[in-house]
Image (cartoon, rainbow, N blue to C red; front, top):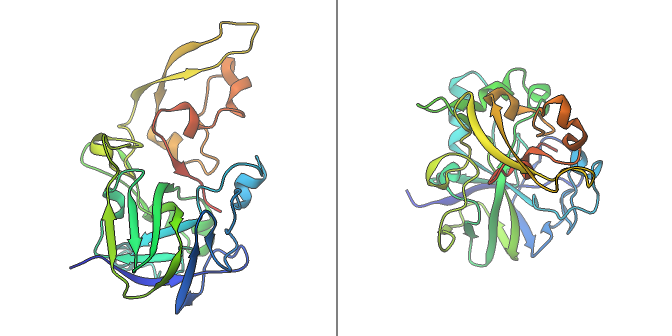
Length: 254
């Protein structure tokens, strides 16, 4: 099956679910015209509260339609737009694409993947138990996030259901967040050790390398922060997990 757009959605307010529409228009560097998350600067409310001047790297949310079939087998009635995505895809392994992959949606529009959509408890408010249902583990015990990917708009254009999707992988070495081969959605094994580098206050050493034992459960927090030892609590608010651990780009919910 050739990859196609299965459905498109947008919402002008910060609703969890986005209504399905016949067509969406992508605007370069901004997002989906008429959508609450349109803009050059961050629009997701959890991130606005932290720094409203951050760049908007989550302009478009994409989910693979195959996830809905999996959820229905588990007793969850979830369809296109219900989990807040703008573009529902069919026939493409979104979670197998590295960061920086570009997707041509239809004849003109191009988006670039910037990170995962990190499941949070808003999913449970929509359907009790849904958050756990979109998390899993691979054969090696690594955490798998399945609720889609985030992207920015590189080239604008209209996108409708039935449009073809063309994949352009990034040049050079893949840029993974977790796991081998640049795969999205895969976390480190339980109790694995990750080497991170943090900047200490000027009164201490200018740089300090430390090893942190990370349990996979730590990677599911909605705020996406590492649980840093008390001796380093001064940095925890200023140093989110997506900055402290090399290659991590899991984005929290709305």
